[in-house]
Length: 338
Image (cartoon, rainbow, N blue to C red; front, side, top):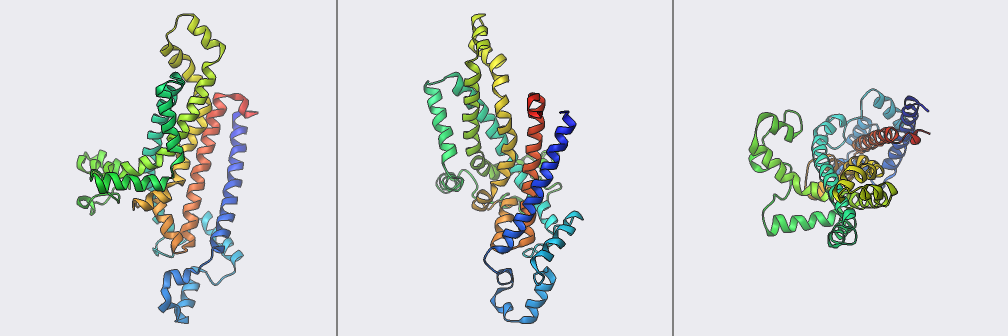
């Protein structure tokens, strides 16, 4: 099978997955117990039939569910994800406001998890059953096991409340609350304008949420890399390399590492999508105004268009990352195409 045919097949599967996500999310979000009228109007306004009728007409809540879905799909293909019931703004605009913050946090978390996961995995495999291996395996196990919300609360308690060496919540400190971002990405703005105080403030606020987000993925990567490296290091060609007089470092870096990382490509690629989807609890605890925070606020007010928009964005990112990983893997190992 040619690479173009393989990519075409994967694109078709991605379209089917996204269609399923839209149908399932729309159905579930409208079946959740609760009334968006009560959540957004309040009890006093609910007593006025005219207000209720106008609100239902404005947001299409008085139409049958199948008709609401058909209308949503038509507007979606036009690039219109609807208007948020809570913010009264287009959902696409809200996503453009909150998504950059999540991208910054997830990107930093991915970099940390990949760098340290790769480093710890290689060291653990090279020092198999020694002290370093035992310590790193324990660290990875803790990272995988501890819930994100609990780690977030622990970090807030120790580094903010007890030690007072890190800010507690938000994306910016009081000195920069009036700052208007040019691109939506504060790190890019700070680097572009040479604003070091802003850059320092951004990193001080993003550090703890990123560490919490990266902890479980880093632990999983450490164990995956260690396992694949140990499997490769037991192969005959590495014994031959050692017999030729190569040092252990040369054997690992020149031979084992390249082949040992192949099974880990999937983990590296999909980690970004999984981190983006796991920001709801972390952003809510740290009051970090990103996509997860927006999703939480939308869910608590039964904001159907916003919930659909967030879910669709996360699904698209995961599908795209999965496609990229599949293509990379197909280049590395042509057997995957068949």
